[in-house]
Image (cartoon, rainbow, N blue to C red; front, side, top):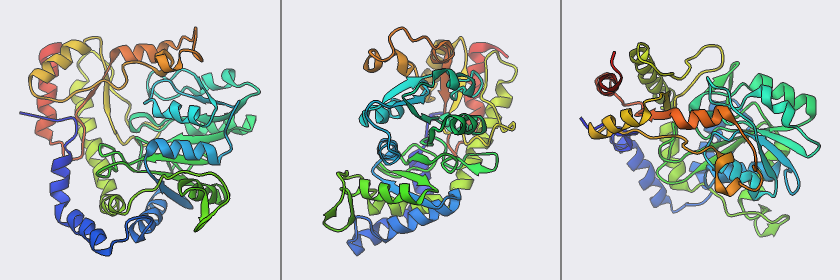
Length: 367
């Protein structure tokens, strides 16, 4: 049985008529840039996430970049973040001329460890950029308390957490800004690139709208140097169809994740946390920690089952950050990188498919 990491084709076929109709509607309208679908999607997304503003843009990396710029982060500033994430998180910090300062993560959630943040604060620190990794919300209560104490801005990386919540609030609506990615494999994914910044700050929202559109708030009037970073109308139409189903999508991911965890409970290794008071996990990835990673991955691949490692090299060990991370040791992140592996996870994953994956793992591990 072939089981991919994510089944984008199956999801498309289940929604084909609605998506095709939406795309054809855009083509017939010939309104391709910042048109009615973009405007409607932004309002619908803001309503769903419980925020005042949702400003779409070209992709998730641009969402981070524009949010940092709009928040006034720049040359000479430091931004505290996690090394156990995709490079875009730290790339965006460098784009604005600031320096990423990496602190270690919690061993159970894989998210930035609030207990490590305060010791990393200097007179150059301007912001904290937590990542809600794999769909598990970071400890935002503790992070916000530290930020408030030190007058720091908090910009959330929500690229993997659309629909996740903590303390009754959706991720992306807790810090000054939340940055979302609509890369095709995300919980809410389009069929190309797309991103969005959410905020409750009116001034920040106005600045973001300028920055994404060549620095223009009024056509051909350019008050600042901006960027060409706009979500296109076709992608917005696709996202509107998928947004209606996001609760069902995330419910399907949680169902599959819980089945995995139950099936792996008797096998040596560590499964991700469930909803245990630390927030509602939406399982963009289902990540297992095991000392038998290579053996398990080889068996899965031979059985036609997808698997991957997110992430094999923490950012403080990457060549791109060698200059700013010389001598930095972050043992939890390093251990996670050496033991983590991701199993197939998507809403349409059936109980039979999950059991097939579990059967291969049991064959390697016993149990």
